[in-house]
Length: 129
Image (cartoon, rainbow, N blue to C red):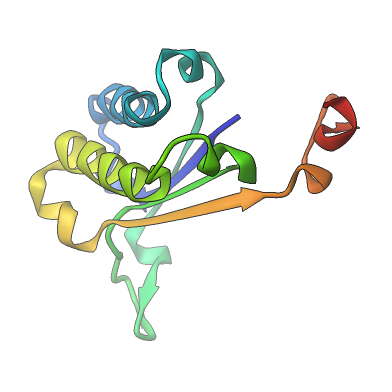
């Protein structure tokens, strides 16, 4: 399952952007892997008040939005250029939902977890396959 955790300034979440953001990020993953992946995409939106961010040691300075997508490592090997395509598609989704001005500072991190360190239902993925 691809899990996306989005961390951004709370003030950007205004009650109207959340649906666009979730839909766009889900569509970004589907654009790389196909529609079979849609029901498996999990997204958590973490809004942090700007006063609780710090950049360069300066409290009250929010960075651009950040998406951390983590999944089994094999997911990144299923499609050629999956990592670069995901980075582009997820960044595009952020810019579409939040405004083009966030693109330059948007951060995307892709993490692959080995099958022997990933479990579903209490059972290691490697043992299931």
